Image 1: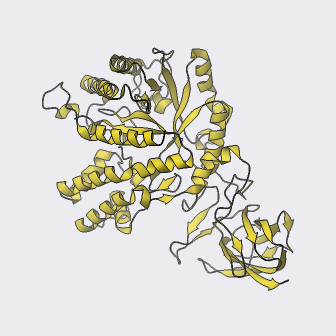
Image 2 (image 1 turned 90 degrees about the horizontal axis):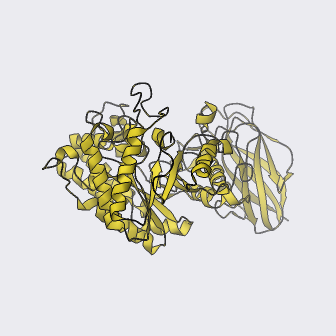
Image 3 (image 1 turned 180 degrees about the vertical axis):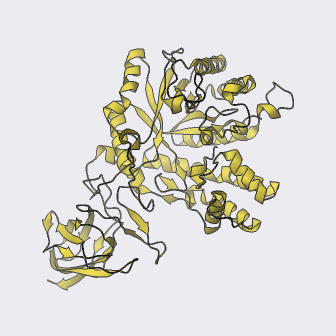
Length: 536
């Protein structure tokens, strides 16, 4: 229900209202309405919930935009009154029905409140030229009334687990200039007052559901907010880009113990598989439930990825100021409608490596095949199809995640940001679009491939690589045993001109093998591995 610009590769003024304004400047009002109607109907469907259930998830946190439920305060025909819209309630009803069918819970999250709840504008779709939630009594009254309306509608619905009443407030009440996002706020008086008022409005209609509160400073500054003012309350925190150690959550555990209040990790993600696995192990070992952000976007580090198209990429470049070439309106409309269609679950790219990192890897140190590798003469294994599993088990990479909040240093994970979301650096082949290779290979890094050899015998292994120099060296290990000597990589020139390195006379018995390709010395690109049978 809320488009944040980065999800659509829009880096400049990424609030949803600004995105819509840009679309309206290029299309007719009807075409703009067509796009948003198609986006909402395609983006989340029963198939998404069926998929989440099949993968092992048990709950969904719905980010709600108030403008699908009610009019902005300054657009009400009668000032101070509330006009209720059907769109948001109908969408929510559908989601709840799909989750009910899958025995999953729904958490309702007010992600974009009237006026916007912070100075991080994209999160709440805030227009800074208008009064914020904190600068307008009418906006606060509308927020309270909206929650009363929601609570009255879902009071007896057992599929709804709770109400996350205000997502990531980030506002400096005491110091509006130097502490714009409320990280140093000591009292949080207006925030606490609004949260208490919302709770009271909910309890007028609903005595049943959990009330979930978030602190200031993107959900982590609870100064002045505790203890609980309701007996059925949960404290939510958000966690991004820091170390996954006990120290990073100790303050949350202290609040839980001090105030005897359950805690929930309401939002996290936007990192590598390594970070995901580490984080979930940390949360679950400390009895903390979690919700990931988001399910899908234009990008590779979520369970689902929305496919882009060339015309939309050109449009995003235009909006981001990368080009001054004005796109034709026909191309804009076609590209946006295609993007909306591609947001549908059946059309998404499924990142099974992300799902595996979240559901299996936190509790398993085993590597599994990324896809079946049945070895006969002529079998080709793409370098990017190494095993599923943790760093140090399925692969080894020196830069696996973004811990910049803790370390102050940039961390990247997959530098190519495509195909998979591990630490391994994967790039799309510029010559063969839709094909991928492993690049930025550093000394000591390796990839493991679980293979199923169908015929015992002697094989030649041919590695397709490219390198700008003669520095690289590769060792091949079968079940931990090095096969022959290190292969030396010779210079193939600039770009992606390839050469073949052949490891001869490798004895492979029938059955399962764990083959590792190790960069004794890095600096080369690795494309694929081919097996040729010589005989017994």
